[in-house]
Length: 144
Image (cartoon, rainbow, N blue to C red):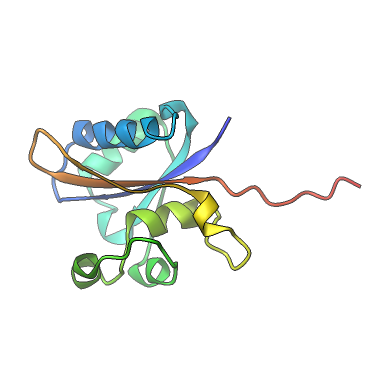
């Protein structure tokens, strides 16, 4: 089974229900379900975001938070000038997913690791969520 890391970005106050709907849609677009998620990640500015914390807690997903500087160091296919101005990094969801998946190093194949680039969703609460999905990078093992 594919094990994946989620990168999450959202408007302040997005509900766990809105976040889960966005995650389900992003995963479904690549034929996966919630059971494929190993962990979720976002920018450290969202460490107190109730929707992200609530969803991760309800699903039992570990959460990782990265600084804007760490996220900005990850090359992504869909950078955003608006996100750069607001958050100090050109990408939150894509970069966080890649870092959490262990797929942002110099030897990691970024295009192959990022399964869902930027899945954008607007919930019934009017809040926006962005989800990226990255395949967990498994280090090569030496079976000698």
